[in-house]
Image (tube, rainbow, N blue to C red; front, side, top):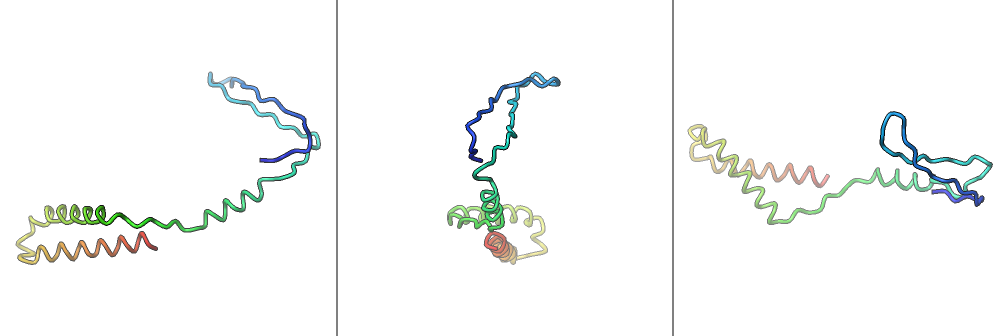
Length: 112
């Protein structure tokens, strides 16, 4: 947004485009030697600086995290129950290890 030293106002009128029936505002600019007092340069710098900041994810609700882990374990159990003969009595231990790995990877992704 720029503030001008002139009090000359330029009207904004709606105009129809020849290729469409939609109404678009037509904006006119004035170039009669009017110089802006302020420019958008400072706003651009602050916006660009804020884009380089890293987004920090909020800590998940413990109840939500626990329910997601339980869902993951249940889905994994459904998929691995067909191969129970390969895992034997260690199927629950395999699922627990996979869940722990999921937790570690999730923490690494969301905290880095």
